[in-house]
Length: 103
Image 1 (cartoon, rainbow, N blue to C red):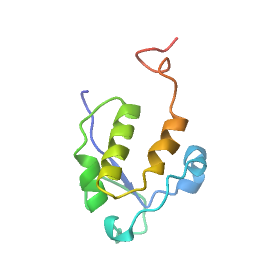
Image 2 (image 1 turned 90 degrees about the vertical axis):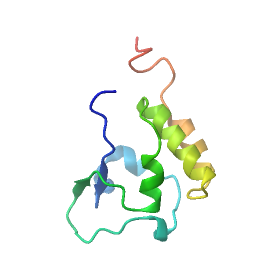
Image 3 (image 1 turned 180 degrees about the horizontal axis):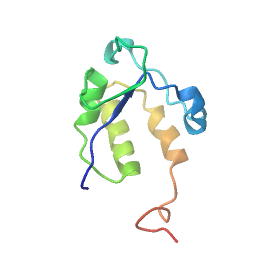
């Protein structure tokens, strides 16, 4: 995919995003998350935490496949609980949706 880049949104206010309020995957150990020194919402492209560095290792794919592969990798590394995979799988679009199967 041309133009793909991992974008990390720091201090993102997810309470204003209707999709993110409805989907909670669980907890992560605070030691594996980068704590920003700023209160401002910023876009960052450099993985700065254990969690982000693991996420950055997953190759580019269509978004839903990439997301599932990231979650499987994080479960394997014991960074998130395996229930997160089932939660996201239940929310995925059907295979007939999207650029390869959109009707």
